[in-house]
Amino acid sequence: MGKQPSNKKMKKSQDQKKDETEPGVQVVHESTFLNEDDDDDDKPNSNNSPPQPVVVLMGHSMGAITTLRMALLLPSTVPKRIVLVAPALGLRGKRRRRRQRQMTTSATTQPRRNSNLFRRANQFLTNRLVDPLATYILRRAVGRPGFWRAGLGVAWGDAQRVTAADVLRFQWPAVGRGWEKGLLLFSRAQLQSSRREDMDDDHVLLQKVLCLPNTTVDVIYGELDPVVKPAVIQRFFQPFNETVQLVEMPGLGHDPFEEDVPAFVEVLQKVLNY
Image 1: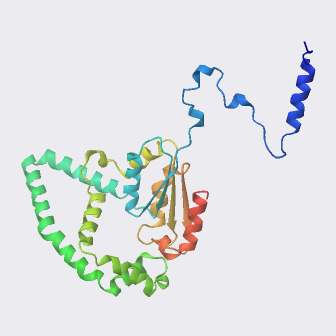
Image 2: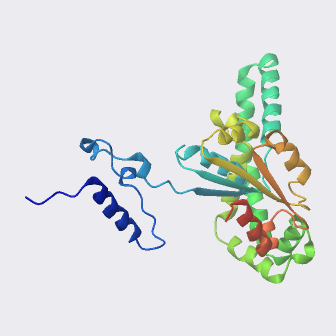
Image 3: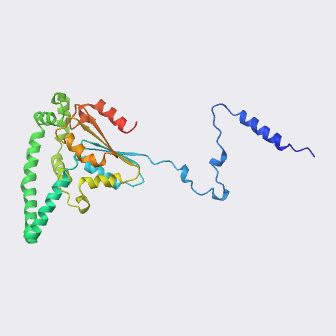
């Protein structure tokens, strides 16, 4: 019978094999891939499961409320990056608290029947008078370039930035049939939602989103925004200054992504760490 190689020789041959490994290739010990117990090979390895893709949600102005609600509807296990641009937050809470005080006062001084009659009358006037009149005015106005030039001149930080191409871009999609009704319904849903879970003010809504795991919220706004003034944004997010990043873009107004596209993209990439 041949003489078996000693343990020293076997170890030396293994070392030689390691030396023959191609340069630049990292040798990983098999124990990092194999389970200690071979019987458990069929069990799924949670460590090797691919990470879930990050969902980026963006909302502008009153759309910030919809974006925060959407984040709450997504599974909590989904990582979320939320970017709010010129967010119109902090307005609903005051309106609702004032309405709640009025309802409390009327409940103590007037019969409930009068409150129901007032609600029905208000709904009747809205459906038969306010909405048709607002629809007619919007339909007549949006077809005129002067409407958009004046509106963009007010909303943007610098009216000189508004060009004929900007006016046409806003004017053309607006002539679609029924858009004005959608705008009215959207605005009313944001400011006068009647669902019980929506009665929370915007601070509570934001707090719920920030409590989600793997979720961040960043805010971008223009220095010269006349619609949602920077002071309003800063005051609203002041309680969250340790968790929410505020980025102010100098010389821009309510639509920074329209006013200076390259500058906005650069800021957005920095916010998202791209």
